[in-house]
Length: 166
Picture 1 (cartoon, one colour):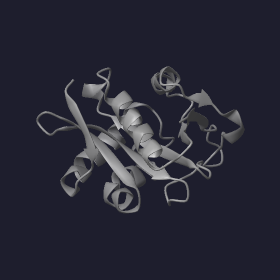
Picture 2: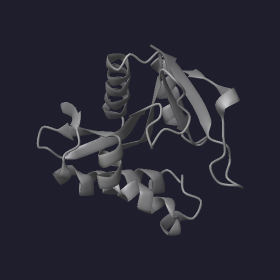
Picture 3: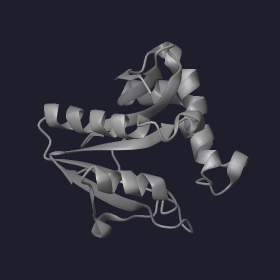
């Protein structure tokens, strides 16, 4: 797939919100399905873009095939990043574009951005059911960091954490 990774523009926000919510719903990652309050956070790309860096993968026609939110330590979207680290969240790929390298390209763009900021590590949290993502992270050199695993909402399974040494 011929894609371009670039910073999200306001005209991308609605499409990326739809791609992200669909990825989470289709993946069974929301405890309350269509009624999950986290859906509002996933849809709110304008807020993320104002407070962090939102990257999109766009195909030749400009269609949004995926996206990710990138933030260095100390940013309002950082959950597990520490000093000299950056983090990415909400990595999502349109189901029609899966298996075409979109997720990998977005993760690599985050690693490049973290290096450019002088970070020593890129970290992330992931749902335990996201097996394809776990394989991708392993292939790209991320290692599990079980000491950082955490539970954002009581009763939810812990999120697994990974780190890539830069």
